[in-house]
Image (cartoon, rainbow, N blue to C red; front, side, top):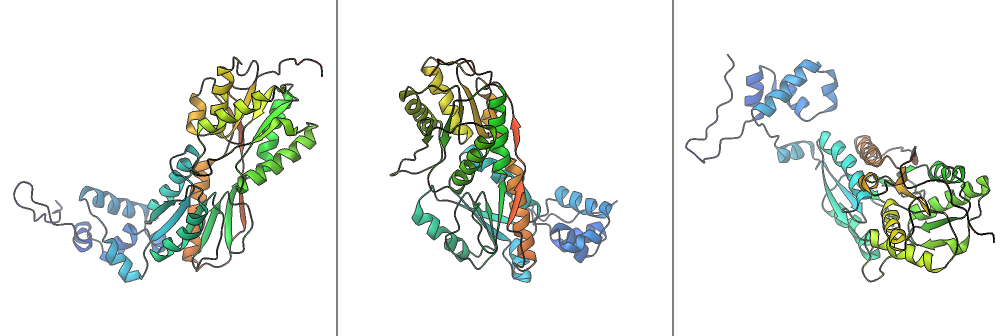
Amino acid sequence: MKKEPANNGSGAGLPAKPVSLRSLAEYLKLSPATVSVVINNSPAAKAIPKHTKDRVLQAARKLQYRPNFFARSLSLKRGFMVGVLVPEISEGYAASIMRGIEDHLLREGYFYFVASHRGQADLIQEYPQMLIDRAVEGVILLNTPVVQALPVPVVAISGHHRVPGVTNIAVDNTKATFAALEHLVNLGHRRIAFFKGHRGSSDTEYRWKGILRAAAKLGIEVRPELTIQLQRDVENPGPSVPEEGYVTAQELLATREQFTALFAFNDISAIGAVRAFRDAGLRVPEDVSVVGFDDIQAAAYLTPRLTTVRQPLPQMGETAAKQLLERISNGNGHCPQLISLAPELVVRESTGPARSLPAE
């Protein structure tokens, strides 16, 4: 019978002595080097048989072994820390992407700082250097412009603008917008309203270009009177909220222009618009069909459930984290400029056949 590493805590409430790497190795009858390679998921772990790695990890959990992070950092002269810069972490879009980032980083033995700039230009300018000052080995920018060159690897999510040395992870907006508009056209919609995204967002720019290309290909007129740009509170910029879509939909209805469908910039604004239409006595989708973008979790629980373009948000986060760690390991060498991920149209209950409109 194996003798477990001694627990030197004595008496109720006294802390036990932490299990060391050496005592864990003795317990497993393996060398400390082998155990260290497995625990730290080092590249050399690929050469270790799976059953051995499983034994090490199971024993580490059983004995509550915790790696000495500071000792590891000092011995390797690395901090195993990255920075993530986001507009706002609380919204569904960013939170879904962060899940993918976090899962990959923690799996690879990294930790991270998150800084939320809330769209404020001064923070967008200052935060990257503040992260560098805290010894991060790389930075992930989520829907945040690259405003300065950084001395560490940088990966952007939904950055779109090509910047030398920066890999961008983005959904294919051309395919995404075409799928959404084609769906509406197939339902008989011709007078389609649009919510454009916020000014200054590269997502807004590239998604709108996709809409214009798709509309031209499908023979749909994009009418200025049916196009309204989402507006942030200038004095208190922050994430998209349903109220923003609600107010924008009220503005659209106030024009008295006829339309049978709305393609919103994102799910959050679409959710607000659905409520505004219902409050105005309009039925969704009988009177107005609504399509969102992102497929955040709330989209499937709205009444009616929201038809939307699904971005693979957790996959985008995981891909960004994977690319960043590869560049850190490879010394920030050659990197792809763009990794484009495929969108998916998710048809639910908020879209239906177009109603008849009075002759113009």
